[in-house]
Length: 618
Image (cartoon, rainbow, N blue to C red; front, side):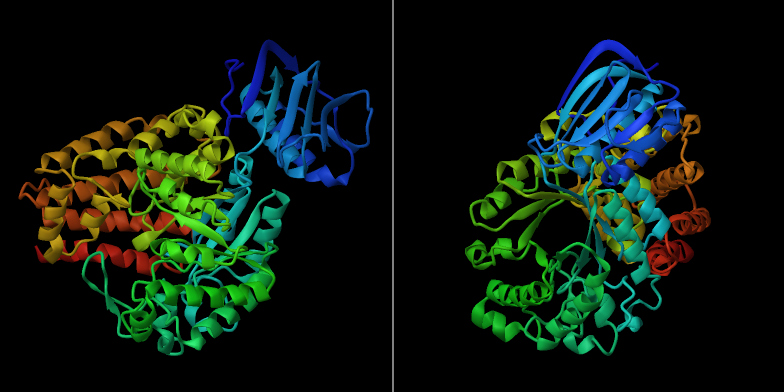
C-alpha cells in the first residue's frame, strides 16, 4: 500500500483525507443514470481492471444495492467541468457539473487506483478548473508530422491530465486535395486522420482546433511556382535574427489572391473538425513592408496594413460560422489598434521565456472587450532535452497573469523550430506542468514534478525517469549554454565552420569563458544518465523512451566536444567526430520513424550537414 498522501496530476484544489482505507469488492456495479456517461463508466471500468484487478459491470438506473461506483451529473455543482468525489463505506461516488466533470473525476479515481489498487483512501474531493480552455498546441509542420497512433496515444494521456483542447499547428501538412503540390513529399495528416482524431478527442472532452497559418511561415507554399506570385518578397529576405538570406515566407497582405488562397484552404480544412474555432496564426510576417506592401506600409503604417489583412481573414472565418484566433505579436506593437478588433475574435498572447511580459500584454487586452488566451510553451524546441527551469517559470508566469487579467484560455505550445530535434518525451514535463497550473494554479504551482512524471508520464515504477528528465532539462543552465528560446548547444551543432567564430562570441555573451563549461556539461550529463539502466518503464514504448533520452544525452555530449574545438582543446579528432555524428544520425532516423511519418525527416537531417562538412574538411 502507498503512503496516504497520493500523487495526483493535477492536484485537486480541495482534498480531505482520513486515516481510513476503503476495500473494493470483487464484484460490484458501476451505476450511471443513462448512456450519456457510458464512456466515463468505461474509462473507470478499465482503471478498475488494470490497477485494482476487479471487473465491475456497468448498469444504468439507480438504487442498486451492490453499487461500487456511482457516476452522476449534478446541476448543483457551480463550476463547469467541476466534480465532487467521495470514497467511503465501500463505495465511490463521483458527481460532475457536466459529463466533462464526471470524466475528470474518473481521471482522478484512476490515478488513485494506480497507487492504491483495491484499497483506496477514504476521502472527499472538491475540484474545478481555473481556465475554461486548457490546451496543448502541437507543431506538426516543422518538420515532424506524428503518426496518427502517436497522436492518439498522446491525446489520451493529455485528457487524463484534464487537458480539454488540442490545436494542430499546420503550415503545409494537411492533405489539401486542391493543393497536392505543397504536401506531396511531407506525409501530411489526411482528412480521414483528422476526422478520426476529432472523434477520439470529442469522446475525451477535448476540442480539436484547426490552426492554419495564414500570413507568415508560408515558405513551404511560396517556394512553388503557383503560389510564388503571392509572396510579399518573392526573392527572399534578410532575417532579423542572424542577417542571413531566407526564402520568401510571408504572403503579400494587399494582394486579394492571398485572401482567396486562405479562403480555399478554410473551405477544405474546416469540415474535418467539429470545433467552431480557427486559429489563423498571423505571427512573424518577417517581410511585411519590405516588398510589395512597402508603399502601403509607408503610407498607412505597418499596424494598419496588418490589421486590414487580419480583418479580411476575419470576414472569411466569420462567413464560415467560426471564431477567429490569432497570435498577438504584431497587434501588440500597436495597442491603439486593439479597440478596432471585432469583439468576437480571440487574441493569443504568446511568449516563451520565464520573464515574458504576460502581465503587461494581458493588461493591454484586459478591459478592451477582446477575449484572449495566454500561450506559453514547453521550452523543448531548439534544445535536445528541454529547459526545465525556464519551462516552469514560463508556464507559471502565464497562468498567474492570465488569471490576473481575465484570460479565457491557456494554450501550452510545443514547437518544432529548426528541424524539431527534440524527442516527444522531452515535452512531457512541460505538458504535465502546464496541465497542472492551468487547472488550479494555487494548488499546483509548487507541484513536485519528478514523481508526477514517473507516475503519469513515464509509468516508471523505479522512480528514475522523472528526475532524469527534470535534471537533463536543466543542463542548459551551465554557464555559456543558456540563450533565449533555446540551448546554445543546438546552435553550435548546426553552425557551419565559417560561423564558429561568431558562435564563440555568443558563447562568451551567454557567460561561457573557456572550454571548461563544455566539460562541466558533459560531466553533468554523465552523472544524470548513470541511473538510466535502473528505470522500469511500464509503457509499450519503454525501449523507445530509453533510446530517445540516450540519444538526447549523446547529442549534448557531442555538441560539447565540438565546443571544445572552439578553444583548440578537442578531445576527439575530426575523423572520430564525423564517425560519431554519423552513428548518432542513424539512431536519430530510427527514433524519428518510430513515432513520426517519414515526410520532413530529410529536411531535419539537413541540419546536421554543416557539422559533418566541417569534420570532413578538417
